[in-house]
Image (cartoon, rainbow, N blue to C red; front, side):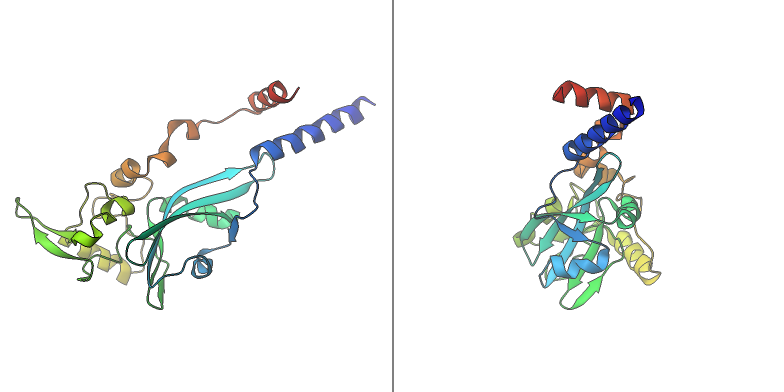
Amino acid sequence: MYKFFLYSVLIIIYLGLAKTLSPSEIGVQYLQNEKGFSKLVKGPMTTVILVDTHATGFLIKTFYQKYRVILGYDNVEELIVRTSREFAKRNLPNIGLSVYRKFNDKEEFLPLPPGSIYINNGEFGDWKTNKKGEVKWKFKRSFKNFPRFLGWGKFRPDEKFYQDLKTSISLNQTFYGTQNEFGPNGTVTQKNFPHFFKGERKKKIELKTLLFEYFKENF
């Protein structure tokens, strides 16, 4: 009798925690891997930046990712999708990077610093020499908000950055910047996408604490 009672209590606890810790999936699209981006985002000049990822649920995990999508020439949207466990795990090193790009009918899936698709494209900007004699990429006035959209902050790529970028692309290797400015360990990414790096998100919650909070709120 005691075992039956204990088993019943565990089931109630599990169902309650699963309900409270897992948000509704109504209206949230599923992305199994990067090949599914073409169905989710439309536009002739598109870049998709991974800005956050997390898992919900107690015993059965559900994985979500948040993307910043730059469509066309000055349209920015945010996209939250449910993903497979494998894709979520594989994308952890890609926080702050562009994981999908589309130029006309050409698709690119190699993780690169956000904005790579625009650098050295005369339609979007030009190489300018600043007061220090440094040659850096500068967006045209009509795209002045792009550094903010892309999570660059005050960062501006120089010619060496662009050459290293091209080398990484030719080798089909993920590029985090000449000085690792981007990605989960990058200074630029950490400063401009701070939500993912909040200290409270890294704290581990013990099971007894989780159960205590559940009973406190529900009984």
